Length: 351
Image (cartoon, rainbow, N blue to C red; front, side, top):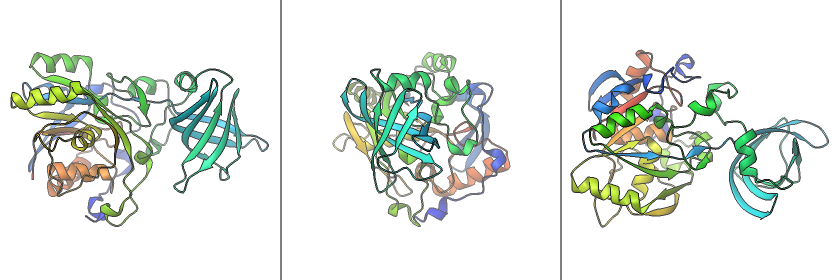
């Protein structure tokens, strides 16, 4: 489809720069076919069908942003570390990163961050950097966890604050791996999980490492021309068994967020309809209208950036006209958009 088909007018005033006072206090737009209902996230426990399987992406956001200075000129450099490539020994690692400074960062550039030293050793065609990290001994991941800054999305137009250390992580986050939060999950609370379990709702987990592609807009005229970014997914045998058990009891599989949809659909088992297979690897799956969903039956998702692959995924699930109509309604009704914004509940496949 044409990328322009997924455009809509998003007033800057509706972009949430801070979270709601309570995680489950956000507004919730129910989209059931052509039906719309304005509600709130704290009703989710009553909206999810009894016995359903709720699937979460439990990756934790890395405190990946650091601000250093270029050796020689002293110019300010911002680096965002995405993943470790390899370890050359104690205190010496190589990482994939993206960087920003007043002048282009070239191969050989040396950067200091307090006692930590960085060297740009490679720059790929898409602008990704390979950075040699010298810590003098400590593990760099541990240093980032204690001193790095959270990489809030640029559209928030602010620096991270102390409250973001809690609110830009889900309450169920585990392994540090992502460059951005799986934002639909930011609405869930321990109390909400208790109410869900009281109604017989089961919970399972997977991991999708949200990466560089999150920050890259679609520039191609047609979505299928967009070079879809790769993200690492990890679906365990325990998750496979949980999905299989849900199918056996004829219960729906509910995805908390588009990252869960992408992971589950990437691992769909072609020999067992509705089921998934265990896997760890990369996915480049692009979901847009016309896609036939094989695993996911219901979806909780935030409102996404115009002309993005994420809104295309939602349109594939809820139906294109239903989705764009829901977005127009949300704008007119003053819903809050994007990472810290409100949410949509799509209870079943709607066309």
